[in-house]
Image 1 (cartoon, rainbow, N blue to C red):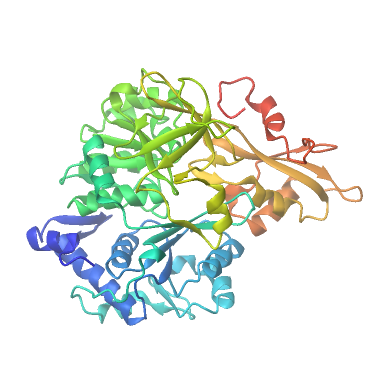
Image 2 (spheres, one colour):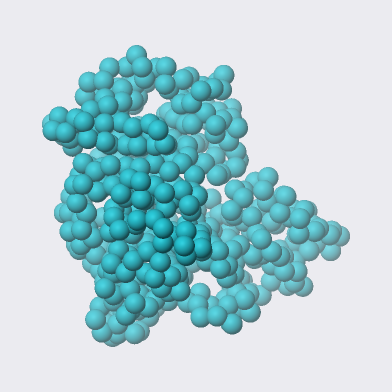
Length: 514
């Protein structure tokens, strides 16, 4: 930890300023830093050193905001766990991550109990909340007895990174994206481009286990701003919080904001939303129609869109003045980020409007896929890295994502990989073959759809298939609809022709996915 931690400096300079507010609970910077230190010292007491992996799980809460900073202060590798995963998916992440500690909201105990029974390498399970399960210790009780002095991080393991976010892969199993300390020059460049200020007030519109909502919250927090915690999204509550706390910035996938702008116009107009100056649009592309409605209902000067990923960080920025004149674009390269397009022959694509594989080079990219070195090599071209998107640029240097090399589905801002779902479907005795793909959804952007070939000696209903999927997968990964085919279309090498399956669903509307 640096000699002068930014939170400690803020607590000394402005101890009475509000750091975090959630419902009726409010912590000043002095109180917040003290609680962060208690958490961090408790983790150190439990053997956490630089490079130790700590899984955490819980809905947005003050405790989550405190824990994120505590992990940073003691040098741990924080591993956020999606609270919507099934016990089976959860156990895989905890074991694969080689977690030494698991810290969680007690309400997630049913999700984590199977992992507790299986993950023998976990040294301690710490739960916050009123009723921790019998197999976990109370984080709240232990933290009360922990000192609130600045912790001393022990050991040093720069290669281990500072965070590890799990993202699914084409093999069907999630893989850990190892990221290092954020590059100060890149962060400062992004701060300048978007215009963050020390007095910003950040609203947690998205779940903090996502790298985007967490990263932009930390930018505001480490600049001495205020974090307003919204535990569960509700569109009218979102409007109330923006007005009540004079929120200046937030980060959102398209689905929450669609729910906001779908409210009656008078419901929106009667709130004073003039404080909102930096809406960061990401997690999934915002349809142009949604942008137009946001501009009409909330304001034209606040909408920024960024393109990026857990692996590659923030790569492009589309500013408010370009939103309406550059439909479909995700913006120009972010400060300090190099972007290149490569053709199938491996040569750079220099001409405008010619698609190529999008690669990124810079200090903001990830270090490794944990225990999946081959996947990291597959994503590399020298010192360039990719997540498989295909894009083109126009004459002004604006980028447009026009296709995905992978079959990833983005539904409500969640990345969903079909192979994981296909593996579950084909495990059903009545399913001989399956292909999963995204179809249009006005609410979610895309929804999960499956084509199956039934086994000769078996029959199964859609509801039975959904129930089977929910036993093994998070609900948002479960297919909403099913097609029954005699055969899954494949090319001569056996690769499923997903474009052919998607085409009938997308042909009546403009899309870059077909």
